[in-house]
Length: 259
Image 1 (cartoon, rainbow, N blue to C red):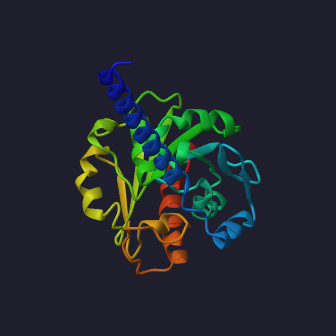
Image 2: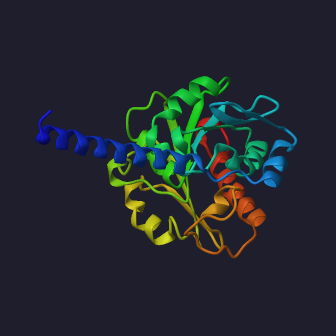
């Protein structure tokens, strides 16, 4: 083997080793997810009238009485496990009768499978004939991207928590989607100014709600998040205000014959 070829092979081996280390490091970082806080999760699991299934591919919250035929596929934020949103969604399920499917994402990143909604709805959508798509943070951005693409689901609308759509999602001119965007005044990761700046990329009639005192992590129940702002309201009050906003939005769905 010539010296030049040997040097080339050594350099290639070093590059491959560095690439493998980078990929392995990213995977380990993604798998080291923010976990659901036990107490709020336990309360959600015990909530009367809500049946919660913790499956290998998703967390599913459904009304014990079968529901009203409306479902939501909800994408978790980056590095946040699906269970962390059960506490936020359980009271909404109880009050509205919707079924909520929170799919698990590869390495806990929705960006690695932005089209997961179609598979999740097919696997867990028995009895549901009207779908919303939603998500928190990066999960919301990926949900918006999927909604603007060519989803298998005929979507009724989009629910964003501490998130926004980009111009590339192609939603600005849509008149067939009901959209709710909920932000927190103390959110330092998807701050209100950024959400406002990206507002034109949602349909003109999108409903926007800002919860005073709420930060980014309070959209779920997984503890403090690095880089977040300091909340001025309790987790319980934040989730209560969030449930109120989402419940009111879903209750106004004309496709369900509600007032």
